[in-house]
Length: 282
Image: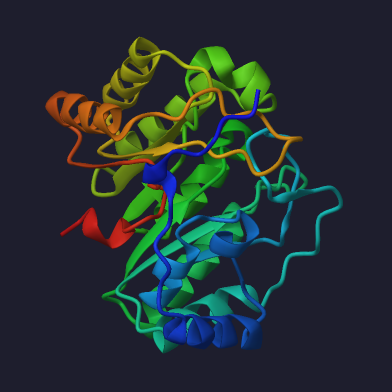
């Protein structure tokens, strides 16, 4: 049954001036953002703040997650100019904290890990002080691929757990809950200097206890930064919204997770994985 969106999910209209500047830079450098490709509800706000989350390795994903609007199907060749173009955009936008994510590319031998590493290095060449956060896929659990990203030394490695384990077959049928936890654990084991981050959506049919247990699983593998947001179905073909979670529950989740020892928690209906990401290391 279709549920009506509650008032707390209404988005304020933002000034569009900076948005045009951001869009011009992205178009000129042939870059994509997850803001646009995933229909992010915060696009206007972030573009108005002259920030964006870069989505690399094309616009087509090899996975079939039922929550995601990013295109599926035939993937594009990897653009060897993309690392330099991302770095140039970071410089032109004068970003101090940049988030780079990608579609999942199971068709590539290293899942695109080397491309992530090249992007991190190019950004650092142009400005060593930029904080680089990468939101990476699971690379099918391949340790050598993960090492490529770790060795490039981003400040934050994010990998989203997305939902509670019981819902994986419906929501992330090609992913494995334990494999995602293992990735975060391996990052901290290999380079404790890198901050680890993960995110979860709520409203997919989980219980509060299941959400809190997932927080604990993330803490048990050393995850330090957490985002919690409301799932919004991109279309009727996607997994339905089972429940709109009240802001009070988001406050509860924030309090519980902070008490578990997360260093920074962003929790709210419109929170997304990279929303206000620059606040985490303040």
